[in-house]
Image (cartoon, rainbow, N blue to C red; front, side, top):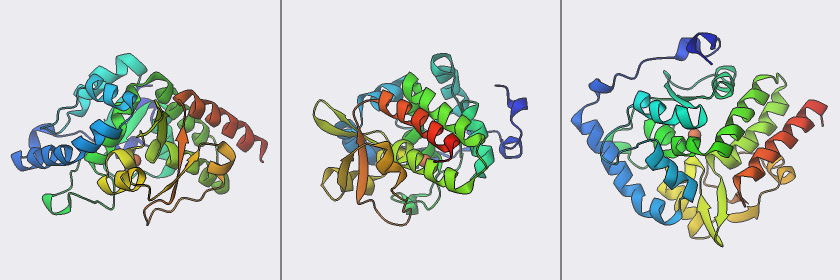
Length: 249
Ligand SMILES: [Fe+2]
């Protein structure tokens, strides 16, 4: 889908002025990656680690979004598209449905390496984008956007938001008997990842009924997250969720 076909999201599209990033900002990116590297190597799922190389992320400099798109788009059709900030939900779903991942361009400062209240480019790119190189995950995410873009009922959207939250943002997967992480919030946050691996959080087998019944709490660390066995599982779950929401149940 071309840029011109984005309607709700159009006012939010911006250029990433890559040449304007300072040496200090590249150094902050490098420090953020250096801090995440040990847990990522030990606990990120295979598909994330493969995707990191496929999209061409570099440990020591901020990502150039058009270069990432150049590597990603031929594989799964996804683009990494710069936006001015937090998007209203209709614009967000429209972009996902068009396989365009909205990405902020600002980076947290050295004073707030551990936490930002709003997602920055480190969360959006380091946390999310490598998974977009995986074909099944890529299709799941596009489908999520296309379903939500058609729904106007706020309660239905809130319930579907739980699927997004417990997969794209905080999803876990079992690989070779071990718990691995693929959700961006766990990938990009030392505190959330530590909470998972040190047992601070109940790990439940992913089931659509329970996920739909588990409200999202954004203001505290998780005490319950969901573990999938493979990515086909969330792809199928989203189709099932679509049927249920469309049926009004
Ligand atoms: Fe996110």
